[in-house]
Image (tube, rainbow, N blue to C red; front, side, top):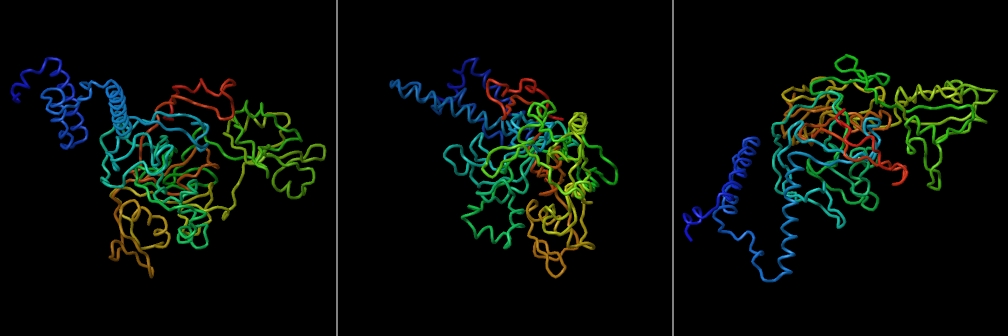
Length: 487
């Protein structure tokens, strides 16, 4: 049958379906600003009109088993392609794994993340298995092929990242990963190791294989955007200042507190009433069993206790609960309890933890941090003063995120083999923080989030499971279902 005959024999229904797909493909090509998308048009034309390729050859098989198996194969392939397309350009599921954004988002919340909010990224690692971020389920191993790698490009979205937006992004410091210790980023591990990164790579037994992951295959994180490109951020006594202007923290922001009681053991019901989860008021003992996080102060040194701000009742300092995260409102509720003597905010002492930039010694803490300038696309950083600090703060941006060769020796900066007195950034960067300010590994720990790492914005919670409860005792948090997750 000739081409002309095949076209003339096509039914009206076939032409309608082809036309629908053609319009969708053209619209997508315009959105993606790529003529390469049109390469699939001839395949749709053949599938609906000319039918040269026997796309459904198996339907004519006389073997019933073959037809049944191929029906499943056809359905699975279609579903995987559909999921890949939807996940890449429209929506993606994300589960909250940690308490860094409580009480905005809770551990066990399942989010529908919109890729359209900030514009979806064109695939950077196109050959990957749908629904697997970087590791194949069950069988293990990589869920993607490292090649080809396509350059970063973002399609037009509905808006841009704004201050206080909750944002899902790929973990920037997750480019290099020690497989046996994935909970801590490689750069922090290297800082704690006496021999640095070389010591990590040499101790395969403890740290496992050291792997590199492409941008879009790195772990998904979710935090609140606090600092915007080109701004200078600083924390003073846990208060955020941007370009010297005070930024009030959101009502859901939490901090760690000491709770002193008159000797009363606070019941789980009281904690639950206020909104404090088990993982927040319990700790593991030497046997790995959960126990309440309190100390009996019967024999405490009274001078140290008074210096800390503790009170006495009937000559006793009672009991002291430690590191309990609470919002301002929760603190007021706790203070109102008749058995509570005082509530004191926890203060971190300088030098007790490492903060970004980890390769530069500062007196910064989680509450007193900065000032730190956030890179902006087109802005130029000059290496004229404070060079050691600037190298520590921006080397990762210039080298790891923007793909330049970077070296610092004899007090001079070399970029791509040539001495450089300045550098102009090619991307925007953001400063992200968790609402649970004292229990969040965020930009204060691992630095800036480049724009090519931005995934999308959580839109709503489609499921919420409380890990502290059973299926028949309130495990599903019905009051959170379909609640907005954007704020």
